[in-house]
Length: 116
Image (cartoon, rainbow, N blue to C red; front, side, top):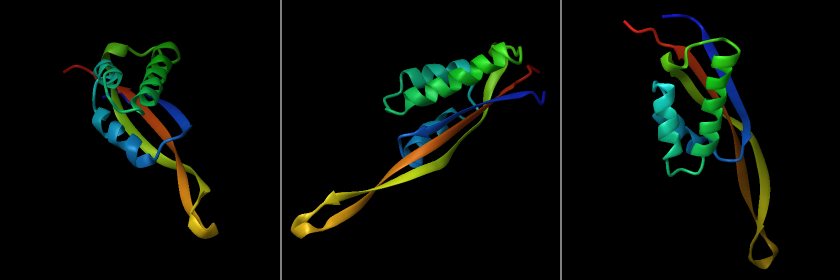
């Protein structure tokens, strides 16, 4: 295995980490072309942001590191929690109920898989 890898990070995505992790778990270990096809036809709303991050990592690998895109696979796809905006929802009798709006950070690491 070569130790060359390429990374792309997408920060401050306005979705909770649990929801984006559902999609990130599915694409871990996939070849890049299969992952892009999977994300394009996925019904999850967040799959468009994940698609753009994977595509960005693939472009970085091809243009900056001169890697073969046919041999690329998703080595890591992990999600980190970002900012948590706190808001209040008005309730009866002058009260307010707190709500939290979560942001996420997505990191995708690609590596070349050599054929055996």
